[in-house]
Length: 234
Image (cartoon, rainbow, N blue to C red; front, side, top):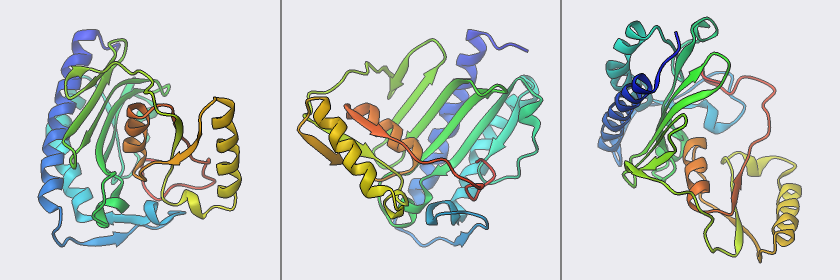
């Protein structure tokens, strides 16, 4: 089944509704006590941490999106559930991280978000929604329709900043190659006729990507993982 533009827009609207509802739930826990556990198999602190808020956020999202699975014959892949491999068989699947950036959330720091995407079984994204509960910013895009920030067309233009901003995961600075990466990026910044390198905020992957787009020239990358990241999604 190939989804048309109208269907993609309908699904995007539902994903936005789900993300905003989940963000409201997450915000209600901000500054309060909540249960935190560790997942097995993670190769970093960030990939091992999970809270009751992750699971409750997922429930809120699925309450909105589960009906679409039958209607549009979609598969489902979520951070806090087992991968049933249906994403390999169906034409499209929901890819959901109900609380991306759990580690900064547990530390009371910005950088966490709700992340929802619809992806083809070949790995091509067709829509994406990211909601930042801290700053109340909503980002979304539908294939071929451009990007939007808070429902307004988002013109991604390079800013007039004179530094290259580098975003990375919180575990990245613990790697042996970290200093070498910084030196290489500083050299790249000079080659780009910029004054130097600036370290950006450290958040989850989704917020790092959004911050990157808001603060160009900037970059964000992480090294490939040799093992599962600690959750069902990766």
